[in-house]
Amino acid sequence: MTKTVTVSHPSGILKGQVQLPASKSEANRALIIAALAGGESELQNLSEANDTQLLQRLLSSDSDTIDAEDAGTVMRFLTAYYAVTGQTKTLTGTERMCQRPIKVLVEALQELGAGIEYLGEEGYPPLKIKSFTGSDKKRLKVRSDISSQYVSALLMVAPLLPEGLELELEGKISSKPYIEMTLALMKQFGVDASFEGNTITVPHQPYQPATFAVESDWSAASYWYSMVALAKEADVTLLGLREASHQGDKAIVEIMRRLGVYTEFMPDGTRLTKKRAEKRVAFDFSNCPDLAQTIVALCAASGTAVEMTGLESLRIKETDRIQALQIEVLGIGASLEERTPGVFQMNPSLMIDRELNFRTYQDHRMAMAFAPIALLQPIQIQEPEVVRKSYPRFWEDLEKMGFELRYSEQ
Ligand SMILES: O=C(O)C1=C[C@@H](OP(=O)(O)O)[C@@H](O)[C@H](O)C1
Ligand SMILES: C=C(OP(=O)(O)O)C(=O)O
Image (cartoon, rainbow, N blue to C red; front, side, top):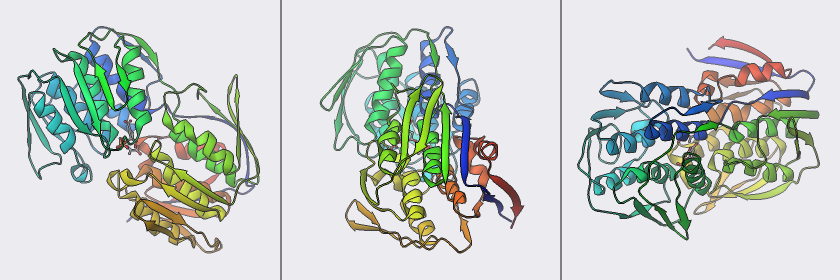
């Protein structure tokens, strides 16, 4: 039996305010750094996302076995945290987590003097973190084209190392704004670092406990942008977003300017209204991979031709997102093809008059990216509970904005 939600929106008109969840990326950095700082930090507006609730619980757990579930930041950040603070732990996760690579991070930590062993396949969780003897290494080369989370994990523990750390990033720097977010959060807790060219230097220094308020989540905002783009009429205010944000997914403002949404930063929130959309667009998602599914689903549903680059990391996230998208857009009559290595083209042929039933592949973003299509016609979404990873109140927020939901088991 599969849980399914049928979603529709009788009027197609969206008007009102949405209180977005807090960013799990900011929250999870703040939690790790506050733990490293010791003392009494005050973290405000911590995300209710499962990824954040989970990290908060795990940081105060004295269990030997730690289950990071499906949370990439939890797995990668805790690996570095336990290693450098000399804690003996077995770190595991969901079946999918054990298929998401971690070798780059483990090898870097080993070079820094951590004793870490693979308990299953080499290069993947589960891991056994055994010891930390330290080393006199102060400069490391680390690949930055697979996941920025390895770099962020190393940076957060770097000030604790006796000589600090100079990290030379090798290859393309993917998801770069997440690395900058890490450095910005470290600064909030009193640690200075420099990022010049492809080298990040973090001197040895103590973190200071601090008060930090987590911003609303720009990735979560992207689904509301998509809804505004597909609505007949819309005037939606998203609360808790800042114009000066640490989050790279604020790129949604410029992307959606081309896809039919006008953004105004108002004193009480970010106001979205409709504007004319372009019918042929091209985007590079290297800096904002979590926006790709939102844009693919929107372009497929609105008959917009889109060329996309920078999607490399999508294959190793909660699911193989390229494959999941290719299958699901077919149902809307669109096809997503890799024309030349790394360049994807989607030429939608609009056929949205059949029954649409989307699978979600244990990936929160598949559910939330396709949900806005309910503004055009009733749709079904399988396993709607996946949203708990980053936006547990997603479906309730849809209901508040006039969507009708019916749950069933099929
Ligand atoms: O550091 C972070 O908080 C994240 C970095 C990104 O991952 P990659 O660096 O693996 O692309 C992003 O996709 C993920 O949702 C959160
Ligand atoms: C990729 C994601 O998360 P993570 O890598 O932290 O599991 C995501 O939230 O889209």
